[in-house]
Image (cartoon, rainbow, N blue to C red; front, side, top):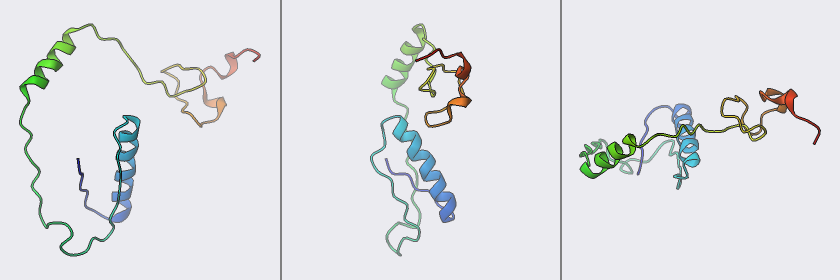
Length: 106
């Protein structure tokens, strides 16, 4: 999938970095490239987005999945306590962990 974002260079760069980070977390990032000032004729003036047709098979799979009991899987960001409610992310100081004072001697 190719995503075209138009705007000033800093805003586009920020949007691409955010999207790339999300895609990388989902193991779906292949490549990213920001062309700040593309040459004339490189990109068409107007590109119409294709209208997605609803896929019947996908909607049936989604309804079958929603009927099954859902296990609440929350994303764990703290690699110290593995608590999904902990606001600390990997690389942050240990003092930001909810369980920072509750660790025993290691």
